Image 1 (cartoon, rainbow, N blue to C red):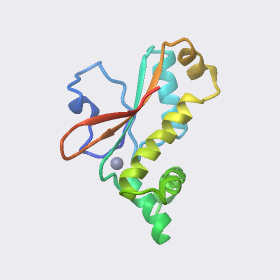
Image 2: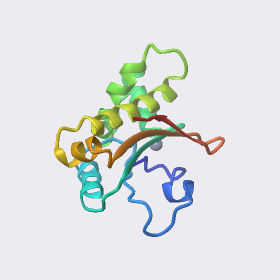
Image 3: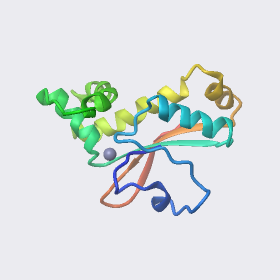
Image 4: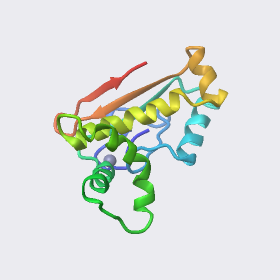
Length: 153
Ligand SMILES: [Zn+2]
């Protein structure tokens, strides 16, 4: 699963075609009921062996979440509630050295990865325990096109 950003289409980035990837995208690659249900479907029905949670450089959704934390920013419509799940990730790296946005993107990925790894429902838990399913985190660098798989089991 990854962000809706037009610069990160998984099929193009990984050179995959029709029928090869089950893709879930939303701004900020967070796990809501729809995303979680989609992942569960991919695992339970399609026997997907690998879930990649991929964040990316200069993510607008994560940037908005950092602005909530640093500037008390507010956003119209459902944008605010949409980025809410990203805020704990921003808070977790607020005092960390380096770029807040970059650190937040990675922290957000790690949180989602952890959510999926620690999901208590057997639908995701059992295949992971049986070694049939892996959940990994990744960061896509827009400048050089590299994907850093930084959160491996
Ligand atoms: Zn994004």
